[in-house]
Length: 255
Image (cartoon, rainbow, N blue to C red; front, side, top):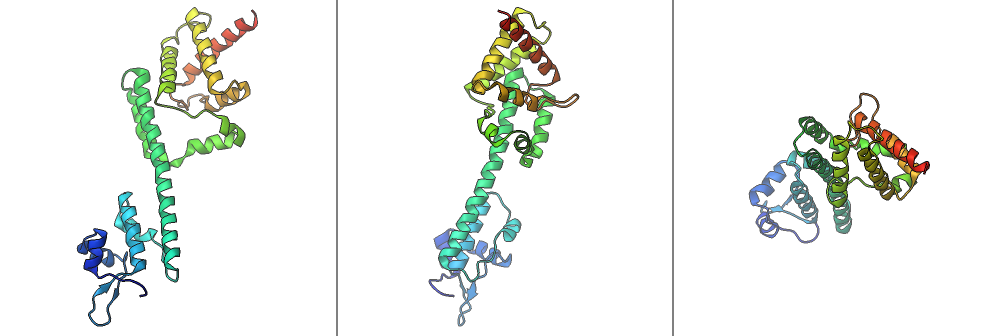
C-alpha cells in the first residue's frame, strides 16, 4: 500500500464512522484494508477512503449496504486521481438519476393537490389512480409517449404542465367551470364565454401556434373508455370543450 495510511481508530476519528461500522463494512467486503506485516493492525489507504466516501454518499441516498456492494466497481490499478474522479462522476450520475425520480414523484404529488383544488374535495377515484401512479412513477411512459408523437422541435415548444402556482390556479379554475357547465348547451352565454377564455388560454400557452395546439389536443384526447390522459379532461369534458369552442369559432368567423 503506497502513500499515507490510517489505522482503524485514526480513520474512525477522521471520518466520523465508528470502528464497529468500519469492521462491519470489512465483513461485507465493502472495505478491504491491508494488515501491518508485524502488528497485524488494519491499515486503510487511498482506495479505502474512496470506497468509504462512496458508501457514505449511497447510504445518505437511502441505499442499503447489501445494495451498495454491487454498485462499487473495483478501482485496482488506477491512480489516486483517477479513482477519485471516477467515484465522484458515478456519484454525480446516481444523484442526477435520483433527482429525476424525485422530480417525477413531486409532479405526482402536485397532481394530487391539484385534484383537490379542482374538486374542492378528495375524490377517491383520483386518489386511487394517484397511488397507482406512485407505484410505477419511474416508468417514464408519459415522456416516452410524447417523444414518439412529437418532433424534437415540437417538444421544445410544448408548455410544461404546472400543478402549482398562478398558472395552475388559472387552469384549475377553468376546469372547475368546465365541470360545472357540462349540462349547458354550447350556444349558451356561459358556454360561449368559457370557450373564449379557453381559446385565449391555449393561445397564450402555445404561443399562438394553432397547429401545435391541434396536435397536442389529439395527443391528450382519451380513446373511448380510456382514462383521462390529462387530469380533468375525460371524454365528457373533451366533448363539451370541442362543442363550445366549435360554436364560438363558428359565430366569431361569421361576424
